[in-house]
Length: 110
Image 1 (cartoon, helix red, strand yellow):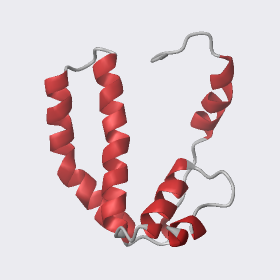
Image 2 (cartoon, one colour; image 1 turned 45 degrees about the vertical axis):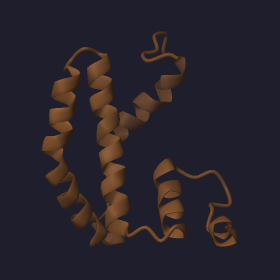
Image 3 (spheres, rainbow, N blue to C red; image 1 turned 90 degrees about the horizontal axis):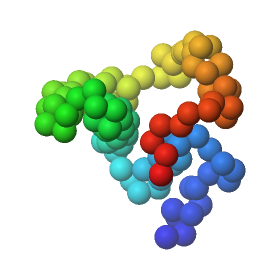
Image 4 (cartoon, rainbow, N blue to C red; image 1 turned 60 degrees about the vertical axis):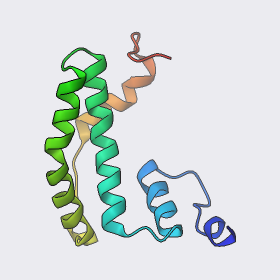
């Protein structure tokens, strides 16, 4: 248990970083961790589509089943990537995220 605590982030971290730290502390292989992370990410999108009525549960399960091979390929490719392979430009998403706090309507309220 002490080894796990030693590898925890010392300050708040993005979720993806926290997942990586925990997986590393538990000696979970990188490719397996990435596949699980990608599956969870896509499952959230499918779950939202089901709740919005865009697709049904049967379609959601079928969609995730269809994506499994793609998830494994993406995990394999990502595991071999370097920092030089990373890059993004999400200016629109960043601006939308800034506006999130002041939006009137909230979907999926508990």
